[in-house]
Length: 77
Image (cartoon, rainbow, N blue to C red; front, side, top):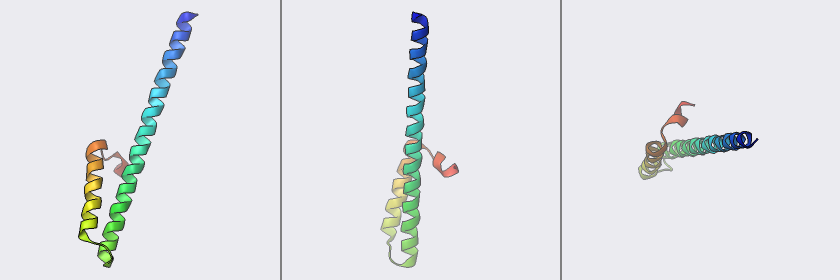
């Protein structure tokens, strides 16, 4: 009986770890998508005359930093 409980406990731990990893991945994707939207908005504002090149560059730098830290998987979804 003890072996069964140990195996069940280990499986539960593995399930929780996988769930946490999936949540982390989703949060990174959402953050990447948000940064991509901000870059688009900054570029659009710059092209319309109400934004600045500095704002666009800042948004691009933030997006590039996110990609360096977490990869570009959100761009392929």
